[in-house]
Every structure is written in C-alpha cells, then in structure tokens.
Amino acid sequence: MYTPPEILLRFFRWFCDPECCEDIEGDLYETFQRDAGSKGIRKARWLFIIRVLKLFRPGIIRPIIKNRFYSNNFDMLRNYITTAFRNMKREKLFAIMNIAGLAIGIGCGLVIYKIITYELSFNSYHKNYENTYRVINRFQHPQFGTGTTRDKYTHSLMHSGTTSQALARR
Amino acid sequence: MAPGAYAIAISDEIETRLKRKVSLGAMQTSLRRLEEKGFLKSELGEATKMRGGKRKRLFSLTNFGKKALKEAKEQRMGLWSAVPDFVLN
Image (cartoon, rainbow over all chains, first blue to last red; front, side):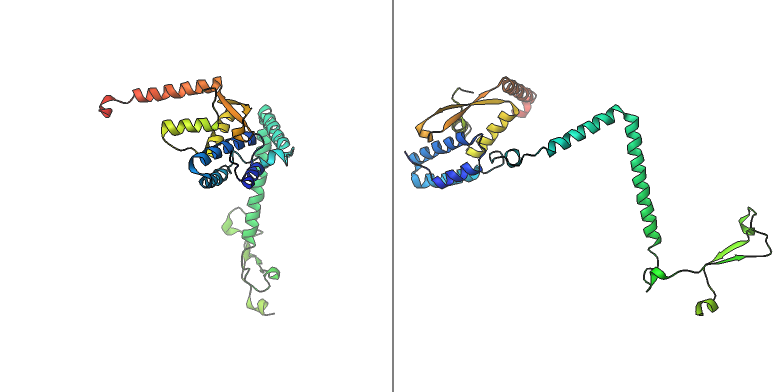
C-alpha cells in the first residue's frame, strides 16, 4: 500500500464540497495506488499533484453562499418581485397608469433639468457672472395705441437688449 | 450503465473505447451536473482498503436519462439517414 501526500489530501478536503468529498477522495486514492504500481512512486506523486489541482474547479469547490453566509434577503427580494408582477398582471389598468405616470414625471423632471442647465450655461466665462445682469429696455411708441391690436407689426410694446452708453458708463 | 459504474471505471471505459484521456476533475463535474439535471442517480457503495477506507459513489441511469439517451440516438440516426449516398461514395 502506498500513501499519497497528506498535505495535498488535506488541501483537497478543505476546498471540496462536503457532499462529494468522500467518494472523490477515494477515487484519488485508487488512482494513486494504480499509478504508483505501474509508473513508480515519484511519478505517481507528480500526477497526484496535478490531479488535485485540476479538481480545483467550480463544480467541486464547496459552495460559499449556501452553507456559511446563508441569508433570507435574497428569497425575500424574490418574493417581493413575484408578488409585484402578480399584482401588475391582475390590475393591468392600474399598473399601466402608475407606470405611465411615473415615466412622464421622471421625463418632465429630466427635461426641466436640461432646459435649466442650458439657460444657465451662457456667458459663464465672465468674472462675476453669477451677479451679472442684462438690462432690457421696454419702449412704447406713442403713435401706436396701447398694444392691444392683434397685428404684431403695429404692436406698440418693444424690447431691446442694448443699453445706451451713457447708462453703461454711469 | 453497468452496475459497478463509478468515476474511475467510467473514465477507463472512455480511455479504452474512445482512445482519449479524461481527467478526474472533468469526470466528476460532468457526473455531478448530469445528476443535478436528473439524468443520473447515485448511491454510496462499500469502502475498500484500496481506496483508503473511502466509499465509492455508484451511478445509475434514471428513466428520464434513458429517455433522453434514446431521443439523442434517434436524432443522430435521423441525421445520418438524411445524408445522401453520393456524398459518402
């Protein structure tokens, strides 16, 4: 009888799934016996090392989550999701209204945000741009009434973005 | 599968019949996956001194596995018979 290296067997027992540990260890033992008989004990040891390292693979390594850190959170989350889907299936109109409302709300929020960032993006290279304002003049030409007519060319109220130099100089 | 089917016996069969090597790790993982899928069932055999006092895991086919095998064979035969004669000659 030959005995395989004890350190490697211990390493194997450490990583192996306890459910199938015993029978694979037996297989390792048996192949080692056979190799030692036919190829000599030195070569058998090398083959044994390679075999153990090849067993270090996902199907055989003990499951980490299942045994040691089992938590109910995943199952609860799955339950919440299934119940949510069942409710949606049962009350279709309600679900559609809810989802559509939420979608429109989020969409409006995003659009408003984009518009505001666009409007705030101008002339930000000035020194005190946060406290810089633009003066707009409103004119009302006396010749054309009060500006209640519908025709825009006879509209009396006018806006102008330019300011006279006299005002600017102060 | 024969009554004495366990990992080493099966890989020996493959080596003699198909002339290719199978590593123990590959054998064990595929056997376990087949068992998980319900094609195989297994039980622990008796312990021998040759195996360092460890028991064997003996595998056998389930009815579902037999059905799957037959289906696979029929599909292959169907494909084989679909090959025209002049291709082979």
